[in-house]
Length: 372
Image (cartoon, rainbow, N blue to C red; front, top):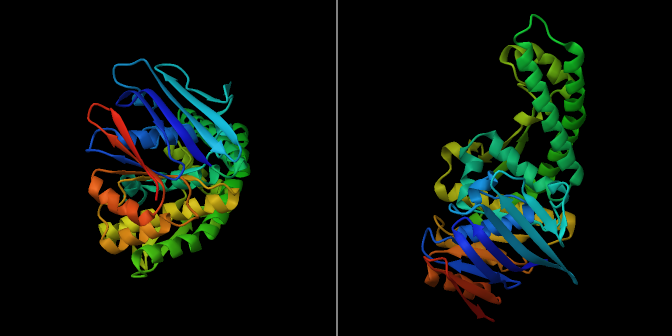
């Protein structure tokens, strides 16, 4: 599977842009701020129906426009799929495949799998558990439709239960029957989500360890563990144990929406003791493990987006990453870099057909194709 072409109207800093992509390696070169990463984000939109960086769709429209359009064609085997994303201020986002509008965006997720590696991934390590849960959800939803449905239903029940808990704070008692309705929903969907996450982590852990060891030259042992209250209690027990606390705080204090991932180097916390290079190696290894896992489960090779990932890496780690992505297991790749000379060295080592797109300050794009 690969992206054949990309067309933008009023997307972020682009008034208009059109690209014909190489089915192997595509490079966006230019100074900081010219819009290289925005092109990757447009591809992310077509695959996963949303921006990688900004979840508010209207903020991705060019500042002086009322609408934005992203279009592209994906080749899957012998078939070609045309994908359209239209965004208007103060209106619902429109998403179409082959001119047919989706009733639910969730039906599109997983058709064109994609993995993005970006400096923004540092939030996986430095920020709270919400970022790491988002990572879990993003991966599993790309191959398991039931997981996405369970997650939607769980979050809907959680919202309703929290609303009821807040309303009950103004009354002398609480509505056990109504609260019980939402409890049953959280139990039903929460335990399914837990099992899916546990199974995923068990399978991705060895992939992740192998990638980290290869990139780092086996300098240290990286660990990834799933942390959830459901390892100790089932959802019903958790809700019963925390009912008084929930009523006091007016929201649901426990459940799978509090799950987390523990990231360590040996017995030490990566966040507290890891260097910038170690943290970035961890991020890249985790995303490459995600890539391999999706390919293994779905039988489809995801598109790989590499946004300025070679910054802060020593020569050994850069060389190891290049060896990995040059492997036949990887399909279409998009890379951004500010340094043309640096990128050319990388491309020579990749030994693959490639296109270089020069992104200029006025958003003009020139392209150059090379065949190895």
